[in-house]
Length: 227
Image (cartoon, rainbow, N blue to C red; front, top):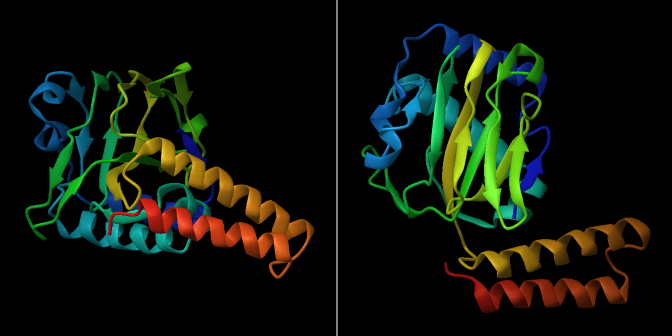
């Protein structure tokens, strides 16, 4: 399941993030890569335990908590503290799969990485190349979204970031553990919630059929949830 979530951050918020990020030093992005990923990773990132990354990450997590589409698609249990990276000209991230478990040294958090998240912080016309390519059951999916938008995809997917040939690709990336471990079940629940929200717009939240379907939605979460 690959889901794009628009407008997680406004254009003004993106500009604020970028101004803060531009004022601090970046480091080699391989510091947070696994053994296999480090061999194919060439980018920069904000120091993950630094004050800037933590402050911006907290702001981003608050924005995610207020976004109904993100919550519906991810049903998050734990969100790993967001990281921030930058790809300049010639930089890229070769084909790889994310680590199954991530640990945070500052908080002691350990999560199973069910979903990977990339939130774009540069507009598509600011850079050439830098596409996120995700392999799924239907083939390779190419993602390059407007600034402030994000994409959710299975952390088990093979994926790559193509070389940047002009400008700079700036993004936040992180992982989450969902309350619904099974990806197929999570997809079914998301489809049901999407259908319910469509009915709410046409009918009302108190319509008997909407109430019945809402009950089914919550009972499915109750059946599958790992909390």
